[in-house]
Image 1 (tube, rainbow, N blue to C red):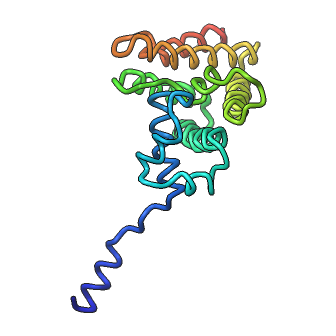
Image 2 (image 1 turned 135 degrees about the vertical axis):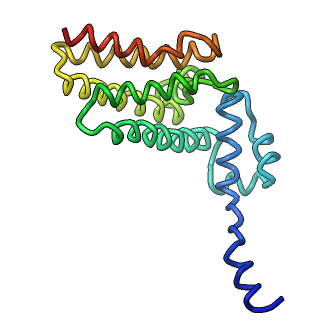
Image 3 (image 1 turned 90 degrees about the vertical axis):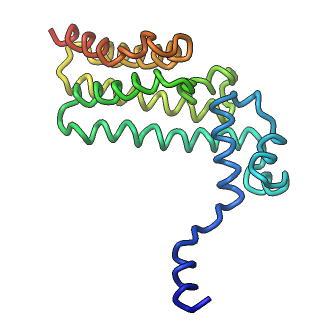
Length: 201
């Protein structure tokens, strides 16, 4: 192989993913689709093509692996939320409707399993569990932001509107799994807009 070809091959060759990244990617997929408690460490290392020692070098326990999955999920959630916010600067009503329009569309997909944070909170009722702590932090921040956005809209009772929007979101996460295509979650954005309109009168 010529030196030019060697350079081209090295440029085009993507670096192999680290064992920790492979473990987390596999865990994220399995935990979301099947549930955290339903998936054992043996299944994760088998799918990831790594050994148990390599998993425990990065994640001291399955609980910590679950928390790491949720921290990654949290980052992805806020990226989606902030995309909707950035698309409508200075217009919190449009920001919320844009975010919920995307949520409604996702609920209609056949592989939709709701919100990983909500699912984890249901699986781990014990307060203080690493997975539940991440989930609770995410939901508390979402509640805070929705209340602030309701206040920015000029709602007389901003906290009640913010909490109402949060209840709609959580309802969409669950009903999306129950009803699937054609279910009520598809209209979550429209229902949110009606709630906002009624709260601003």
